[in-house]
Length: 467
Image 1 (cartoon, rainbow, N blue to C red):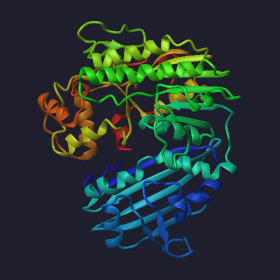
Image 2 (tube, rainbow, N blue to C red):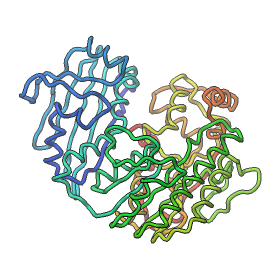
Image 3 (cartoon, one colour):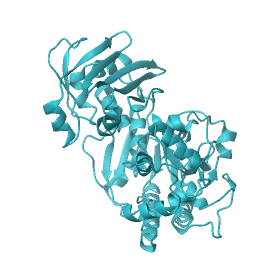
Image 4 (cartoon, one colour):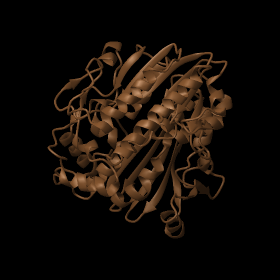
């Protein structure tokens, strides 16, 4: 995030590692006429000549049924404004009302591959509007885009190992980023999903989370199989007995279905079973680690403790011989595109971004890149080695709600009135969500990761959510 005036200057960068030759990657990245082949967050570019050097006229084809056609009919052409083949960088600049938008791609050499950086920079009085209508949308799903790029250059890629990764729930926010990250590292990834997605860069198998079917064959590989179970209904729903039952059933049933299929897997190397730090309910000031007991009193909220306890029990009861079995209790995963930030940013941008409730409730979180790296360590692909068993996937620096809202206001450059507890409850009722997600809290850390020597790289909350 730029440190300049947030109303007239804004910048966001996404970065993804690819286990591939930097020159091969840049041969695609540096040719803007091919951008639409791998970045589906917009419809690509029209390059008006074959020069492709500085000054080349280029038309951006932005996304959206409303803004896209409007932009195409009214916006002037942009151009390539910077290009350096030695540093593998190309930049496109599009004039905006009283300002401009620049898109820059750069490919840097990195150990066993390269890093692909994509930066969007806005300037001028229209910055705030363009940030919401175009800029963030261009950055969205960049890891998935990079995985498509990897598929294009795969014949020249540095494949790392023979292993089959199976991800159930692989199309949600965490699942799609995990699948894309592993594909970019040369892994064979299969996703179990209820509905296939066009142009998704990982192999997809249809399943309903209940019945056995053709999808079970992906677990019977000649190579070591690593199973990561993220499947389950969306958590943030109205707090009704019917919804709690649906949340529980979707997690328990899918875990049991996977256990039945995995029992026949000849080489199940790893099973990572997802859970949540919300299992501790509304924990107040208690400091919670893997050795802390699960509450059974008023702190044990049915939609949190009840659902997560049943989820973990289903895994613990599964008769599966995996070399490494983990329960990963993940806290709130943060990234500029994290689903939770949507409603919080809505409050901030309407002037209501002050503390929620008392503002003192704890907010345990982990940056997306740290979460992805933790998964790779648990799979044995990176160091340090994480001992099998229960692991808390959470940053060592939990925050108070007041600190979280202050960070969101800082990124937006806006003041905020306290929202209290009534307004979130009204908003949750209107949106069909659960206000207790924001009004309760837990101070959770991991003694397991600390002892293992896992070093968190995303400990600055503001920087993590700004991008």
